[in-house]
Length: 406
Image 1 (cartoon, rainbow, N blue to C red):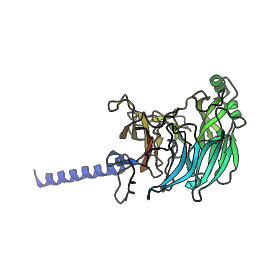
Image 2 (spheres, helix red, strand yellow; image 1 turned 60 degrees about the vertical axis):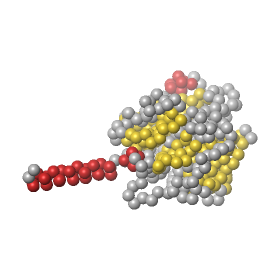
Image 3 (cartoon, helix red, strand yellow; image 1 turned 120 degrees about the horizontal axis):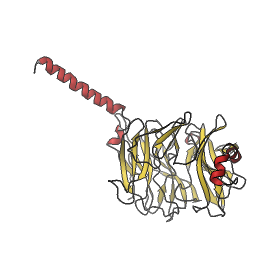
Image 4 (tube, rainbow, N blue to C red; image 1 turned 180 degrees about the horizontal axis):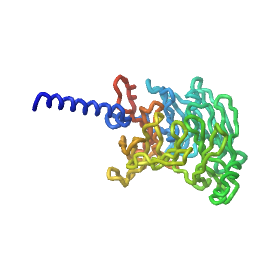
């Protein structure tokens, strides 16, 4: 080889190496492909530890706290709400003796008002209440009676509430409540939905005895989607027959208008800017154009949600029928929104845990900075909350993992 050929070979090798490094630096999946650290968030001996839902990160917007529900009962349907300081591992009780609808979403506990408040619902003496806790003072305040809470934006003080789906009474509409002042305002009514989408509601429900159910606000608090519900004939809310729910209606809170009707639910979540709905199958629907796009089609999917940075998604799924799964196994996967690429970060048995009438699911959710993923695990008799930490990047100092009981 001549000296010129030798130099050319060296230059080519360096160029390839530099390209590989640039690829790693620009590949948002890279921190999840190796070096991921997984541990339990809090001690779980003799209690369930549950985060509420994949639409709500249990980590506070500033990354200081983790919010969860705990229960010492076998079915997990009564318990407490707690927060844990990530740096010290110190746990604080915010509310006790809570009665939930099930262990599936627990008390729908969530952050709001920039992390200054926690909101949840509770059934006290047969009456459902929406309650807020001021994190700094630990003071509670009842925000609404005979209603339940949907999921809001952690940045906003406004939280969506609705009447009990099995017996809504006068509370059939979507309302927002202010977590600090307690002000309640109605933003869209069930009558509005029936008037706009009457052909569908008549076909689907054959009734005008309908209410708005389970609203979920976009992260920027500009939009909300919800189901439509027809109540059942009883007072037993712990039943699959308590109500019949279907569809997905999108409402623009800023423009004060109904935007779109989808005939199926699909385990939906929001894109960070509220322009798209992302749902099971890892399918994003652009609300302006109506066009849909499937991301990482080879990836598993059940409860998918997009990272706040908008480059990745996380999802769970039953992988019993996959080549790498055993009966009862579920997995957590992180996928790319730009190409067919994903990585499995955890696989675990998920057939045990809280023995609620509605089984608990992993419901994975990113932290605000996109560096951690929280999810429930039902591998043993107690439901456990785990966190997966992305591999540290140069210059980062990770928080120590808490010293937990087995």
